[in-house]
Image (tube, rainbow, N blue to C red):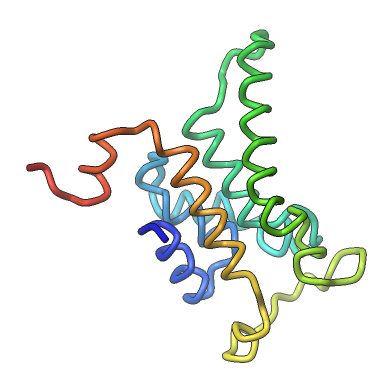
Length: 163
């Protein structure tokens, strides 16, 4: 487990939604202020506003892929295809562990949106929810797949050691 996966789980335990927990951990690397990361990811908790669609941790993983490796040239189909292939690969890595990226399927819930009222974060909530696993996995995928090419500068950045 890496430093970011542990930060992500700790963020979740502080009460942040799954997307916020992951994105906040990588905010500095992504060039975001904490408040920006939290606001950006706030709509993606509960599988996008508790609609129970794409898992919030997976959504944050995709947001980070866009921030770190996204494209800006709308007419360049080659670059778009390369980026979409990256997104599909990230999804496949997550699916290889859990068979889905859909929140309701991950949680074993019925089809359809959930109440918009968030669940109270209690000891029982954390004991019942497997979300920590999904958050940890998404953060580990970001670390291994999106940050692996950052090299020595990245090591300095995360270790705080400039020797």
